[in-house]
Amino acid sequence: MINGWVLIDKPTGITSTDVVRRLKKALKTRKIGHAGTLDPLATGMLPIAIGEATKTIPYILNSEKDYVVTAKWGSSTTTDDREGDPLKSSDTLPTKKEIQNSLPNFTGKIAQTPPIYSAIHVNGQRAYKLAREGKEVKLNARMITINDLKILSYDNDRTSLYVHCSKGTYIRSLIRDIGEEIGCLGHVYELRRLNVGPFEEKMMFSLSQVEEIVYDGDPFSFLHPPQVALDGISVLSLSDEQRERIKLGQKLDRGDFSPGTYQVLEEDKLVALVEVDQDLIRPKKGFNL
Image (cartoon, rainbow, N blue to C red; front, side):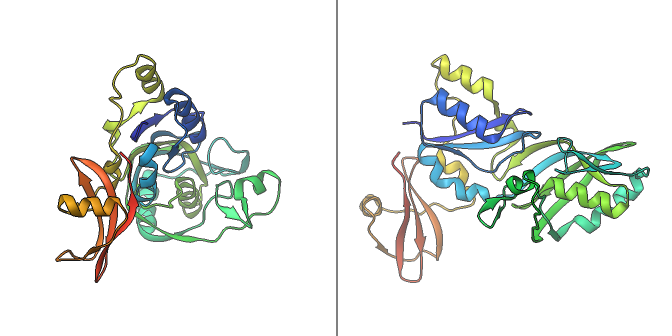
């Protein structure tokens, strides 16, 4: 069984599910999933977990992300990107100074309303499905954090921005809201995700590269071990006997360890995630690697 993470540089025009489907076929595996959807329009970092690595997906979903987005000013669309139908237009285009002056209002902790064309559940159904059926969709604002937001380039009706943000941030909503505040309207023209948590742009492979490596029978040079997703979680140093007990799902005395979540490794392989509380070390999740 293949276990690990592969970081795909998703091309535009296909869904995240399409990427998973193609890798599932190439790798001949059934246990596979992605960590964080990218819209069909978007390109860039799509982390794919395979085998036992799927157990670490929740730790990536909470990660911060980096994007480069090109905003097109002067019009809004139903989807808040260029794939949607036109909604409104404006004769006003923003100056670079106007955009720059607006950015502090969208930095730090802010309330953001997701696009109605999103995968958020509304009464048991996806918001985008209800929107496509012409039904009214009302989504509540949620708190997100934008740590860094700056202009990379400016050219009349288009502006390229760098965004470093928390989980749950919708870049389409960000551009929509900036356009509304300035009074020029706006939507996403291009979007690229660069980094997701510990996964960096330089670690990515194209989908076709991975398929070629697999079909050529080469070693899986694109694969990263499951624990790469656990960046920031300390490793618990245990004896061989203690490690075996953890593998069997048994609890241990806490000892001198501070409370928290830890990794347990055996010869650089992830054995388990454990939780240390006031009294015990409790197995949280086991890995069969």
